[in-house]
Image 1: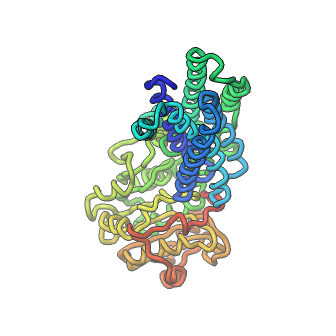
Image 2 (image 1 turned 135 degrees about the vertical axis):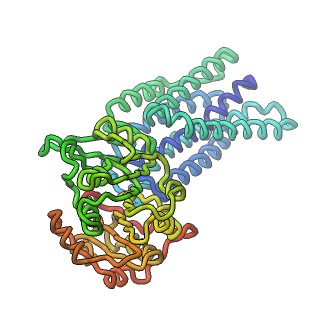
Image 3 (image 1 turned 180 degrees about the vertical axis):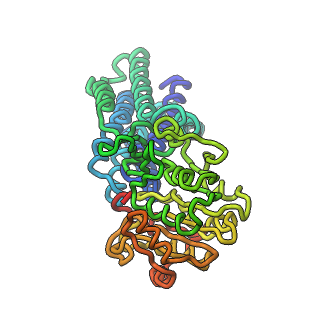
Length: 498
């Protein structure tokens, strides 16, 4: 029997470590498969499965073997494998990039199942060890079950609100694993002192696994130069353009910024966005613009250069990205270029009505989409922010059969009477995928002027007029806050920036 405080501590720690692994595991696999409903579902599902398997197997084993011989090795092994998860996921992730169900499930299983199962086997063994008589069964089981649940709750809140804000995911995992393994060694020493011979052996291989996992974690490939609140981010210099910089978020080319020339637009979809602004307002006229999603702030910089006096407000959810913009991409904010950190849906709700000439939506990625920005309710907030002749421009990314794009166009047509679509000819024909630019407004849009502006940007993209957009959208589902299965509609293959 363990001292009460030791039993409580072991149960608290083992249960808490599983929840740390679950939360950080999601962030660990996100750079490779995105943060989608499926990713969250896979991680939560495998964590629950591992808890069930571990608890069942741990309880059954405790009835056949002395728990004193198993608790310490399980803690050490579980802790060692929590450390080893980091290099395992990073090596596997380089082979499993993409949000297809197979990659998501396999990578989530690699990150969660084995260490969580081992650690989940500890609490029932502690319960078995603490049962001095049948008369205490209810109180012992209830107390330790409650302590294990408290451990999970504490780990959830501390990790989500504190640890992730202060430490990188790699540090959290290695730290959690090593603390758990050291706790296992301490329990082993305690049991040996209390009852020599009863604790069995602590295989040296488990300790070597913890050390080896830590060393592998240090050399494992990582997509991160900097881990932000939402992304693995890094900036890469363009070898063909001395002042060109590419911002990569979760391995995808998200933004291109020319530090010396804000009018240089490298990505075709950004050229299309710029063409819309060129065609829908007189040249050089300043605009009042709202940007949903910041990235490298390429479009706000372009507008400031070609339309002096333009007042842009950027809503960017990730403070780390804004920090990278300032440190490496030359961002300088001012009254004419404001950046607000926060969810764009919340920022939209706070926007004054009828003041924006332009709203640019560029928060959708190739692996995941913030669904709360896709719905009728969200687009009605965009419409409320626009002037009577304002324009909404949205960067959409999808691949055949383009189910998400069709649904988003159907949703936009519920809010605005005039909706156009810009893309490469094979994309408009449904034969290929990538970026598409949807343009919506309360006023009619000049397709000829848009086509001319695209050509002036050096783009080969085409304009689909309103009747083609209506046919393209067809009877696709209109997305609402109550029903927006965006992750299921999205076909996430390929990379943005095409």
